[in-house]
Image 1 (tube, rainbow, N blue to C red):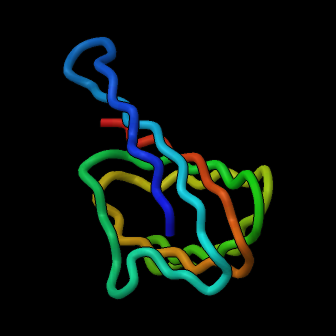
Image 2: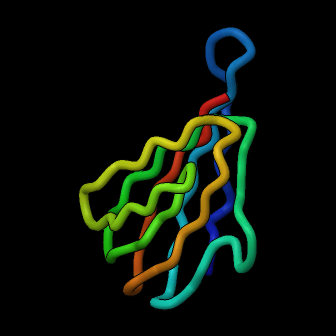
Length: 92
């Protein structure tokens, strides 16, 4: 998985927004083992490809144009079903 460094900027109050892109190769899993969870809400837009995402114990199959909204603290992981490109925002 190739990650482009996240852009972090300060917005109103004490909130921060991080924006980044991730390129997955078919068959890649993120994280490689276990699950990820963030202190921030994560919103991801699938630009290319298909992924299977497990979030909060529920499995979702997503593709181009789909949007994922993962609440702060929720355990999740993704497996690329094909080469994929995702844009994400961490809102905290």
